[in-house]
Length: 401
Image (cartoon, rainbow, N blue to C red; front, side):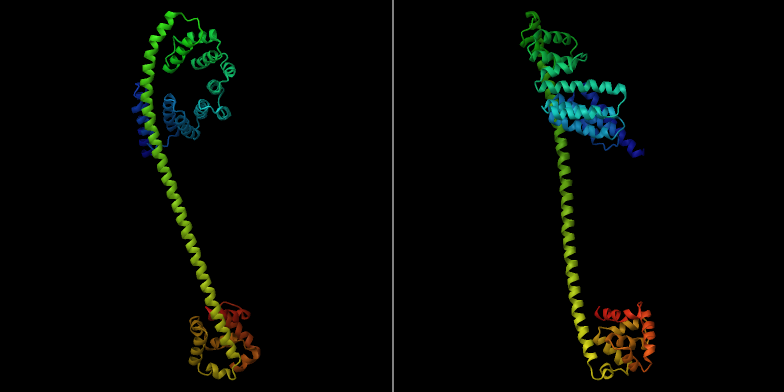
């Protein structure tokens, strides 16, 4: 790990630890700000980022903003997935499931817990996870008003949350003695303000055997509980609002990036279309140009082939005049051939081959034997990088281009 990564990790860890301390002190807004700063630290420690987002999601859950809680738990899960900590990832999936359960999406919740249970875990970790999964399944059933299922999932329960769900299920089923039994067990040790409020509801709104003095005591305590809940909930709501603003800014930034990428993509497509259009236009123009040159070449060759005296037509005896005729009729052909180190005889052979004369006619023009013409053509063609049979085509293309 380089020094820059170490500095980022240290900064992120400091913000995270500060956020946890502030949460314990009840300073919810300051805690959320610390967690946001940790998330912005750009550290590459995926486990730390997973814990940061998990804490923020817990605060959203306590503020009853379950949609935001689910979104942030999902971010936590994404970071834990990149680590070797399968249990942390499984817990994140279970937390996502719990939020889905609260929002009435039991099927989605069950799919998430199944994903959590499918991970490779040690026996102890799996046992711990299964207890959390039972809480989620029980909660999902409670929110779907499937109270018999709640009792099934909470059978043999020992932790306070499962007992709380069991008490609530009995209460909704109007089995008041059982509801009161669990409520009385929980009341002395319950420290969660929200659960205390639920316990008070069970004890005072059902046909229980709670004596009047106990109810009066709970009623006086209820005012304190309600005030504490209201105060804490107000702080949490402000903290969650701060988080949502930050998430909105990130979403806007991502949207701008997406729009920029779209704009770049569209720009490249337009640019590509323009380039393709220009290339097609150039190809058409080149094709039209070559076609016009080809027609001109054909016409000039026909005139020479039909000439009564080709020697006179080409100014054959004067090389300089011959080259001027070639350049005029065939667009600088003589100059092109000279540039490729062709000698006088090569140039004379080239113009006669281009016109399309036979070996006999070429031999008469060069005052040599017809048998030697093939050899002379091959030697000339070799200088141009082609065979004797390709020489005429090579010369035509040179004259056209």
